[in-house]
Amino acid sequence: MIPLWKDNIPYFEKSYNQEVPALFPYIVENSKACVIVIPGGAYQYIAGDHEGMSIVKALNKNNISAFLLRYRCAPYCHPVMQCDINRAVRVCRYYAKEFGYDGNKIGVLGFSAGGHLASIALTHFDYGKTDSDEIDKVSCRPDMGILCYAVINIGGKFTHRGTTANILGENGDPSLCDFLSSEKAVKNDTPPCFIWHTAADDAVPCENALMFAAALSEKKIPFELHIFPEGRHGLGYDYAVNECPHTAKWLSLMLEYIKHTWKL
Image 1 (cartoon, rainbow, N blue to C red):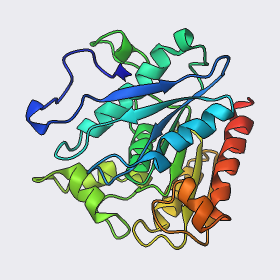
Image 2: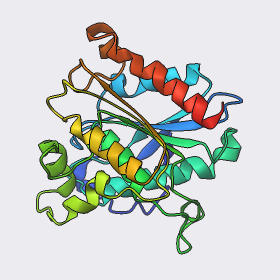
Image 3: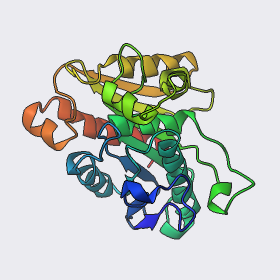
Image 4: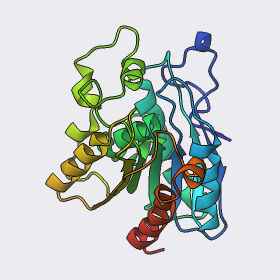
């Protein structure tokens, strides 16, 4: 386990009884890239292995190192989650040479609310701070995004209400909705993305994926988008294999995308 901060954790609240934000490394010898895996859970909790370890194992089998992210959830709210993912990218880049992968091949892969957090990393980043520790001096811009039935819109017609409520907090400022709606925050230097969703998702509508893809297209940022006809929300990979095998093809398509994009 690698704590995101060894001490002086920003916004840390002991009374919340949550473990410190951390990365759990699963390093493959001689790998050339790494991906941060971010399970969902509506910012209320962190989902199980179907959005975590099973994905880590698939990446490792394909010679890609992985980090499983433990981030803070409600009652923490914005900007805490953004703080965690930005720092996670920095940590992976800072230790790239030590772990043996390319520090310019760092991806973020998120499901549902974890997908929202990945999209925040893709749209709200900097290239290093000068007024903090050595880790914060490196860039927190990911080199690739992988969005799996991600919440993209916050507070609007196609949002997930639980995710919105949790990231805004009990006394949330609705003016933050535009800032946290990633389809409105795509920049010219947002990284390339692989996006998948299902048309049958009745918890997080596939319009979230479509809106983000449209925003990428407008900025001429490369992306690959798959909308599968079948599958409930929260499938991950393991459930998809059993419930709708056609949708489970997302994993092989994603791995092919990573290898093609990064020339692995």
